[in-house]
Image 1 (cartoon, rainbow, N blue to C red):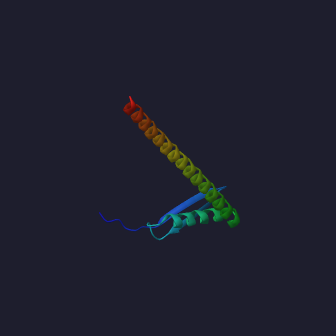
Image 2: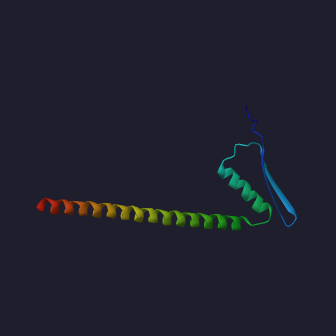
Image 3: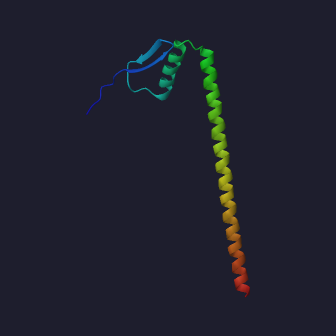
Length: 101
């Protein structure tokens, strides 16, 4: 079944004002969708500088979360590596003690 590439439309209503953004195709990517949301925000009378500030803050928040997640994973891997190293060391010590007996 073939689908026709129809227009995409997003709308927002605030304080009795409705803003609609429409593009002529359905195959929008995420960047294009974000640009449509920006058009809604500006159409609802948020300033472009406010939009940019929020986007920057969100980017910084996501970067901090990603950094924290990476630090957690690295520490988790280090702990797993240490646990494995200690377990191997303990097995070696047990083997040596068994051989001496």
